[in-house]
Image (tube, rainbow, N blue to C red; front, side, top):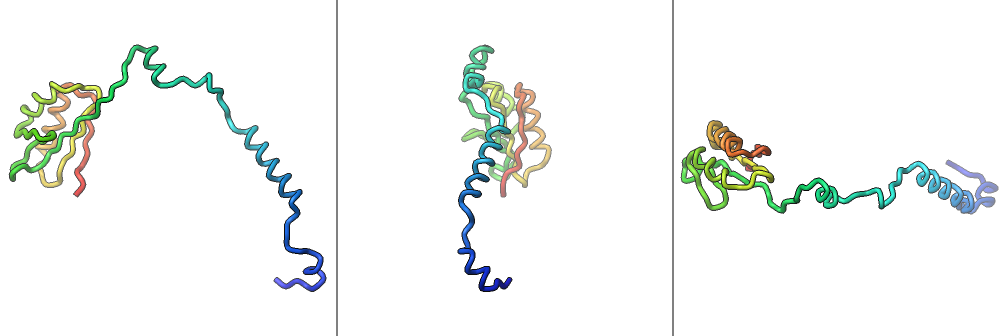
Length: 137
């Protein structure tokens, strides 16, 4: 784009600041009026809601059951414990708190029956929240 000499001399290449400030204030007022605001007194904390309902919060974490090959044989691992059958796994899971739930992490090299056994053992032990997680390679 080419400007002739008269156009270049008349403007110094700056925008008028008064117009810019007006536009900024109008945008600010628009966003303030159109946004939804709630008063802090209307917000209730989760702890207060639980106190009213009688429920207690739990700092417990979900259990993790790893279905993997242990010494070349498919098995179940929870921390340092190693179980060879779904019945052994179910007996241990029955002793644990049920609210946090359980994650069943399955390695790629185990038979599907072993993974299904872990999921069924968690359900039989009384867990309502059972999540299947494939193990990362």
